[in-house]
Image 1 (cartoon, helix red, strand yellow):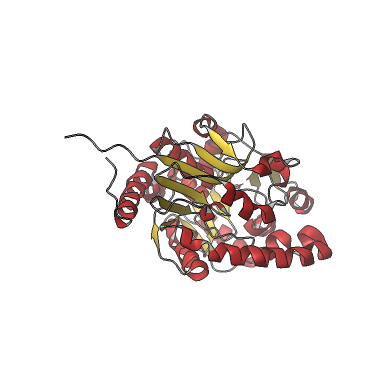
Image 2: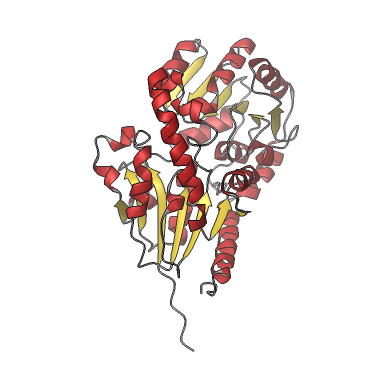
Length: 376
């Protein structure tokens, strides 16, 4: 009996400008589909994993505009045109890894489009002020961007039907997909490298850690002020547009390390009293990496943290995004003896292997629903 040929697969991701949570999902997809070409709006070489860097990459016309690695968010109004110019006529299966616009790519009617949705477009829906409010782009800039983002939101909703099946990275994001796109989704938690992030020798220091992009919605100012009230040292790993403002408000007990290697981040997890997550995350890979290293997490009781942190067992969930509440939560974490093994067991629920198993199952279901057969 002749074996049925494998489907022709293409991967598409919004942009390649750094190795964040979405790119870690993309890295796993590249491992699963080693021959699939990759399409993206903007690419900055040298900013993602070796596996992604080695992929055959097709970029949009935005790549040829001035300094796209720096201004990629400024080019948001161009993305509807850019994604619709991609040609996927040669592919049977298109997998989009989307937090912005690429869930709207057009594929042939006979093809299957599965979207792994990290979040519906934050800028256009519920986080406009965090990115385009007067404090970020000025009063005039904010007024000009509001109708642009409103039009982008309408386009985002109107193109949701181009996806055959949505995969959400958390129950929280599944709720957002239902609210903004009126679509159901399958929850497939993103991959965490629990084989790499492992416990090491514990430190007795009263210090806290943040690993995050320095952007407004992360609410790092809450953590800085809460640590100041406790006179507790804080280390911040990451870069972003908020860095100057955060440095200005930080005291001498706050260290800004910028970008760090995976090896350095792993050691920082192992030596911290707790890792802090002060903002609402769609999922949040950092808290799971921290727990995989046996380190508890102090997180806002919202978003993905409700699915990844076990109150009182693997960390502390803070009831509201306020300095007083976080200072109390950090103090409670310092007074509590957490079991590193319990934290690690919880993290293993989100392993890379678990992601691949769940993703393949959802993919086969999507293909079967479209009238095809599960892949060989």
